[in-house]
Image (cartoon, rainbow, N blue to C red; front, side, top):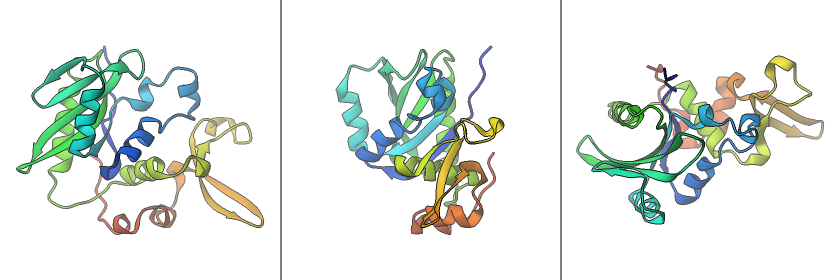
Length: 201
């Protein structure tokens, strides 16, 4: 029986090619990634890209498989997780997306497609707290984010951390999921700070 991953948006807006490649490596420092156990890190993640990036990825290698509205990369991130690129009509407009699906579950591309359409069809532009945190993680330089190491209590080790202050008296790190609303707002781009908050489905 498959453990169905949480399908989650990890970047707000349309990613540039540079941003797309950064997000391909957004878990590079995770201890599980280094141990080769990264399926659960990637499976279920998705973000929007432009048509040019969608077509560029299609031309790199022959796809593993292709349908009218999606194709899968032949190169796998891990044993059964690979990139799926979507071309979806949402509210009458064609848009393009990248997501990671675990193909050991044959229904995963269709489930992700449905989740993307549902999320992007909402009439009001909004972000959940989880989406805000994922956007911050995706867009923050590696020098300002990391993972709790040996200096942290054992229960916290391996969790994502974020630099919240750097000054004459040293630096202050916090666990990403424990950032306050004010700290989250300070790290978001101005255009995203005041979007209404939605509750995750």
